[in-house]
Amino acid sequence: MTPLTEGNPAPDFNSVDQSGNIISLNGLKGKKIILYFYPADNTPTCTDEACNLRDNYDLLKEKGYLVIGVSPDTSKSHHKFIDKYKLPFPLIPDSDKVIVNKYGVWGPKKLFGKAYDGVIRTTFVIDENGVIEKIITKVDATNHASQIVEELGLK
Image (cartoon, rainbow, N blue to C red; front, side):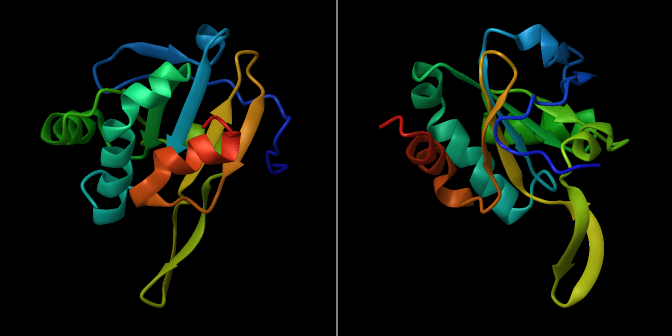
């Protein structure tokens, strides 16, 4: 698969969130989306990222963006994560890795010298027409909302 770049159409997906609500990118046309991919619920960095987006959710909404998270975790895990941290946005379980593969964010990683495959933390900002406006690969988990706003020039 050719890596996605800014200006490409975002790959469509048809999935359900943690509560079984259908989410499809085509169904969100006309809306601006912050689609963030993260490795796992309840891990330190992923929790920092989710809570930072939660704490700045009103600002992102005010700027016209919907926030959607995607990880290979189950609906049950996402429910617990949302409840525990009071997250105001949906999380899509992608256990079969269809969406992460479409977006090219599944690949080799290293942790403590051990190589394995996993989700490469990445955020895609998608415009109203379904086009990738920005790809953030060096995510600052503790300041992610500010990073998004800054990179988009939305101050």
